[in-house]
Image 1: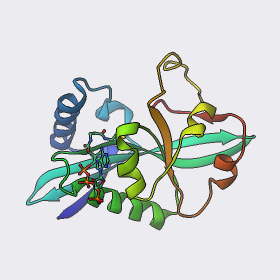
Image 2: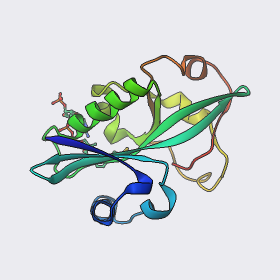
Image 3: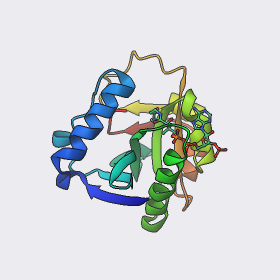
Length: 175
Ligand SMILES: CC(C)(COP(=O)(O)OP(=O)(O)OC[C@H]1O[C@@H](n2cnc3c(N)ncnc32)[C@H](O)[C@@H]1OP(=O)(O)O)[C@@H](O)C(=O)NCCC(=O)NCCS
C-alpha cells in the first residue's frame, strides 16, 4: 500500500477523472469541480499495486466563533472504492497523520451512516454543532440536515473553546 499526497493545483487529469467517475457511481452525480475549485486542497490517494483503493481531500476553511478565527481543514470527498476491506481506515490513518504533523484540526459534515466509521478513526461526532453552523453563502439553507452531523478531529485541542461554547460558528465554505 502506498499513499500519494498531491496539492489540488498539481493534480493530473487521470486522478481527477477517476474521482469524478467514483463520485457519480457513489452519489449518482458529482457536485465538485476539482480543476477549478480545489487548487488549495490537499488530495490523498491510497494505492495498492498502482490502483487507487481510497481517496480523500482536505480543504482550507476558515471558521469564526465569537470574533475569533480558526484555520481548519475541511475533510471531504472520502471514498473507498471497495468497501469493508479496511481501505477507508488506512486512508484516514494517513490523513490523520498529516493533521497531527501539521497541527491542524479537521472539520466536516457527514451522514449518519458514516458516524461509526469516523468515530473508529478518531473523530468526534457533535450533532449540536451542526445547528450552530452558519454558512456565509446560504445556498444550502433549506436542506434537510436531520440525518447529518458535524465531525472533527482535533489532536492539538485548538477547537475546544469553539465546540464546547455556544453561539454561531461561521464557515466560509459550502459542504
Ligand atoms: C465511509 C467509507 C469511506 C468507509 O470505508 P471502508 O473502507 O468501507 O471502511 P473500513 O473497511 O476501513 O472500515 C473501518 C471500520 O469502520 C466500520 N464501518 C465502516 N463503514 C461503516 C458503516 N457504514 N457503519 C458502521 N460501521 C462502519 C467498519 O466496520 C470497520 O470497523 P472495524 O475496524 O471494527 O472492523 C466507505 O464506506 C465509502 O466509501 N462510503 C461512501 C462514500 C461516503 O459516504 N464517504 C464519506 C463522505 S463524508
